[in-house]
Every structure is written in C-alpha cells, then in structure tokens.
Length: 134
Image (cartoon, rainbow, N blue to C red; front, side, top):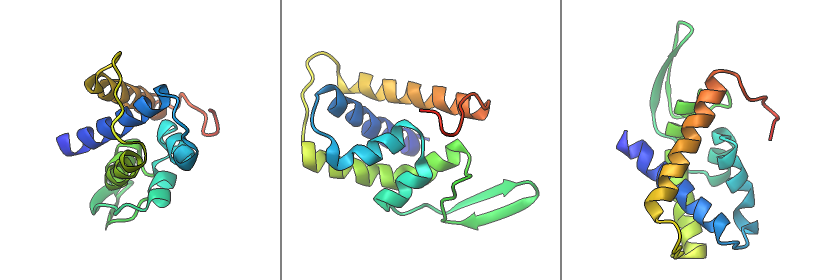
C-alpha cells in the first residue's frame, strides 16, 4: 500500500505547493485539473505512464491486463495512475524545482492530498458527485 500512497501524496502534495506558490502552471494545468477531479483515465492517457498489470473480478468476469478504462473504480484508477503520477511529479519538479514553503511542511501537503483523495473516493463510491460537476 505504501507504493500507492507515497507517490500520490508526494505528487499531489507538490502540486498543492506549486498552486500555493502562485507559480504559472499553464504547462501542466490540464493535468492538474485531471488530478483534482480524480480523472485518472484521462490523466494516464495524457502523461502516458506505464499501466501496471491488474486482475479484476467484476460481475462474474475476470479481466487480466494492463489497460486503464474510463469506468475503472477509483482505487483501480489510482493504482493504474501510479506510474503516471511518478512521471508527472518528475516533470513538474524538473520545471519548478524545489519550492520552499516556510508556512507548511511537505508532510502536511501530503496528508492534505491523502485526506482529499479519501473524501473524493467516499463521495464517488456513494454517488454524491455528478459526473460533470466541478
């Protein structure tokens, strides 16, 4: 589970730090929006990170492949997006570098990212968010 949580917390925490710093994000704004809205399918297709091999049992069918699908449940989308998240973090860090925030430590940014994803997953799993809602 650490392999899933750490890249997400690092990438999204860094993204939050970039946003707080009022740095121009035009180059990555599309991907930032995809992450914020949990659109892992589009994010994977945009960043083009490798999709890990997964085995999924759903409605009596077993799928075994490394293909991201638009209708993947949130946790599977997050697992599939993990390599893309790592690649995206590296691209962002190469562009923006180390950002020093004297107010908030990196660990808090990571915790905020994990809190946000848990709220979004709960909302999605309970159909509390409309698909086109911002």
